[in-house]
Length: 215
Image (cartoon, rainbow, N blue to C red; front, side, top):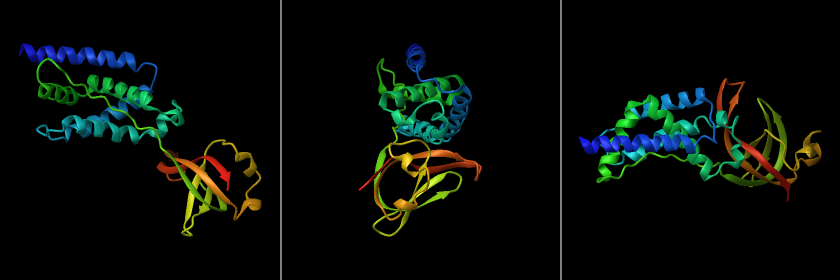
């Protein structure tokens, strides 16, 4: 019993440390509460006897956080996301979970006990930074839907759409339209993001243009 109490006390100290380390990455409290509830609901469904509980909890947290990337993007520049910021965001959510999700504490205790001795494991989740990808093809048109999209035809003749959400180096060239650039071969650097669509009243995944250069 004494060992269990020591582990619980150490876990609490770790969570206080997590809170202090994550303070410079401040997610809105309503968003934290929403993600905490989603994550806790996921944790409740886990098999308590599984040998990879730590990994499963991390997966629950990641699923929730990745589902709210657009909301996090309102307070954090996701284009500058790195390992340190991702870790701190995960730690801030872990701190919220410790306050509102008994199952999280229970599993953390079980993980700690499986480590043996006086060591204690704490669940730290990192949000992977968006990966910048490249696509080459010919400009076909601009589609003005819920957002403005560049439609680019690849070598396989299939059309791919890339959303124009913010200014990039050559964006001013297209302010008056793209008629003069139709059929021009371009290289699109883009990142996959999740944004809210007023048209569908839901979050959708899009490919956001980060740069567009002529080849």
